[in-house]
Every structure is written in C-alpha cells, then in structure tokens.
Length: 188
Image (cartoon, rainbow, N blue to C red):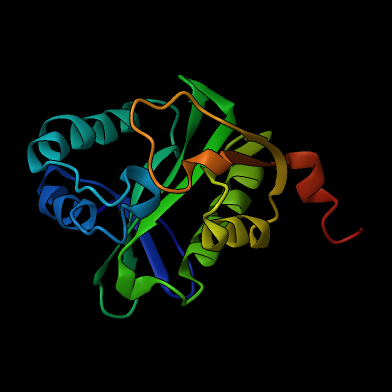
C-alpha cells in the first residue's frame, strides 16, 4: 500500500486495480451521486474500464497528484476518495481539489480534514500555486467544505450539460485559493 499522507483520522493511499469494487459501490449510491448525475449510478463497466484506468494512469504524471483512496485511520474502512490533480495535463501549478465520500463518512468533518491536508501538501511540497474546486451552486455542504479549506468563491456559471439534473438551473460555482493567499491566512 502506497500511502500518500495521513491525518488524525484519515489515510490517503494510491488506488490499485483491486479497488474497482469499492468505486462501483461508491458510485452506485444515489445519495453520493446526487450532485454529479442526479442520483444515477455509474455503470460498473464504466468504473472498471474507464474511471479506474484513468485514475491509475495519473500516478505516472507529476508525483503527488491524482486520486487517493481515503481510509479510516483506525479501522482501515474505505471512506471514499480525494482528488488533487492538475487542471492542465502535466502542469502542477494549478490543481483541482475534489472528493467523494460514502454516506457513513458525511457530517464528520472528514472532507474538510482531507481537503486541508491536501492543500497544505500542495503548497508546501508539490509546487502548487493555485487550488481550484467546482460544485453545483445548490450543494451547500460541499460549498461549506471548500470554504473551511480556505477556498473562496470565484464565480458562478452555467455549463452546457447534456443532461440537466435538479438544481442545475442555479449553475455551478468555482472556488479557488492561491499559494499567496494561503501563506497570508494567519496574518489577515
């Protein structure tokens, strides 16, 4: 198991080919997929043949960037995953922060804990200059996590989505944090 980082309650490690069923289960939960697909599960074949190979391929690119399995540090239970990958292929200066957690992990501060750890790692050891994140405008819980991680609202926009889901009429929001802003966080 290749551990990327640990926090008080989380271990983030690289994905392996053996993690396919964990992703199938996670993406099969309508509540988890609510703000992504309107609750429709990702077909298992898509997870196995497209999503997981793309995740594994990212480990061949700038080190320390990609997707990470999130495990409970005490029990080693699968909690979900975190994403911290370049917005432009091979360019580690700007990365996207994302996460997808099982319902059992919701409301416990784990998304914030993992997000804060990734932001710190990015700005202190990976050469990241800007962290960005996107979610639906109506996804209040994720917006609050991003704010707790220090990201600030940049813009609201409406994407050209092939299939609209409930709440899409309110648009998407982009949040961001620069390394300079992060360094000034304790000094006001």
